[in-house]
Length: 99
Image (tube, rainbow, N blue to C red; front, side, top):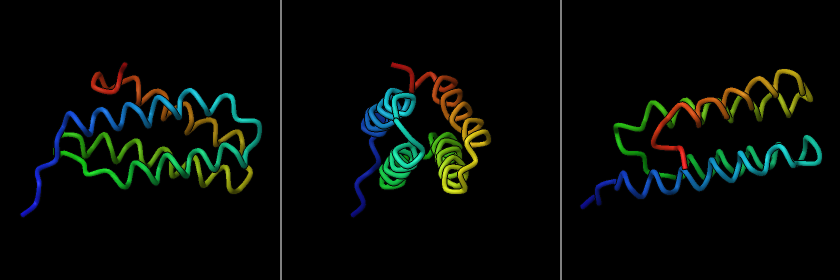
């Protein structure tokens, strides 16, 4: 028997993950630290069970982080910043993610 996904729990966990990323990323000392943070945040997001009504938003945020990781791995800081900004913008565009 599968336990239904709790939207409240999902929202709480996503707020924790996204707010930690938003707080820590600008303070990261170098690209390796930024890459590790993006990777850890993405891995934690992908481990969550996502309620149906949040799947599109979840995918959008995951794609932002995956693109960020790719650009950090290729040492392309300028394009990496585009995806950081996009992730930050997306986190603010969803009312349910705002603290």
